[in-house]
Length: 287
Ligand SMILES: CC(C)(COP(=O)(O)OP(=O)(O)OC[C@H]1O[C@@H](n2cnc3c(N)ncnc32)[C@H](O)[C@@H]1OP(=O)(O)O)[C@@H](O)C(=O)NCCC(=O)NCCS
Image 1 (cartoon, rainbow, N blue to C red):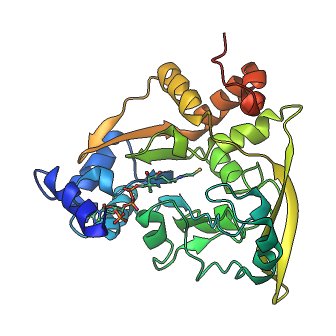
Image 2: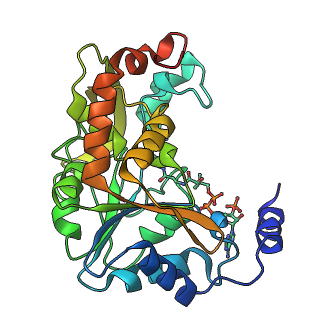
Image 3: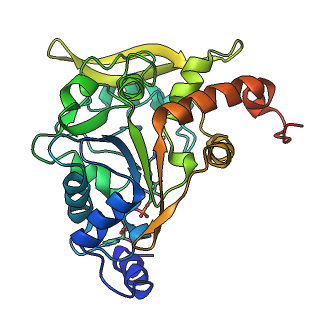
């Protein structure tokens, strides 16, 4: 389907164009408050047809939160990763060294966001937005706490306690799932870190980066993050927490307390350790 055909389909399921005021009122009614620290995962097309697209959504979010608020989005660059682990699609082994040698280094200004939608890609270019300096799993932020959250993003444990997610947790951040489900709920990777499951295998990672002004292929080890059970964990969390999704435009949206979600995720992972670590084994539901 071409871009315009997909947009046509969005127009056809929209009764009215969605405006900034509709979005701001929707965010407030969902529970977004002035001064909040908010981590956003989004799908523009889920909202119905928005006048001004991604820019309008970002402006509405900022309006709902006011100058004291902080908006955070993922800005991952998952094309800049160890090529031997690529699966969608894999590339021939004979290409791996060339990729490691030739991949352009992560640059917070120029490297585009990959696969997370148009809203994070537009947001990263907004005036005043700060991007963390992780070559592969960076975040972006705007607002009062942006600098604190974005600085010193560790290369190892990029989703760990010392990284942006750990800081968001300690700041009692909220998570906005805007037209997307828990499979996009990155904060559960912090649960994976905090659960410290014995037997969770490490993963060798690599990415092109700039070190002391020179392009290098950095390598490190991190836990083998895996989101394949996030939908299941999120559904169980919603049940326990009594999450009340609301429609904004046509999009089903949820606002979650990040610390409650992450703590729940840690408990769930410990309780379902075998099931979670057994991803390479048959995926039977736990008893
Ligand atoms: C993958 C994902 C981004 C796809 O959502 P999407 O709505 O199809 O894509 P975008 O948000 O990029 O929106 C672009 C689409 O909006 C539509 N669109 C274009 N103009 C529009 C407008 N004015 N108003 C509304 N929709 C519009 C188009 O269909 C466009 O599709 P195209 O880029 O293929 O042409 C989404 O499902 C998702 O998973 N988001 C969360 C990502 C995340 O944070 N993951 C965390 C990983 S741990």
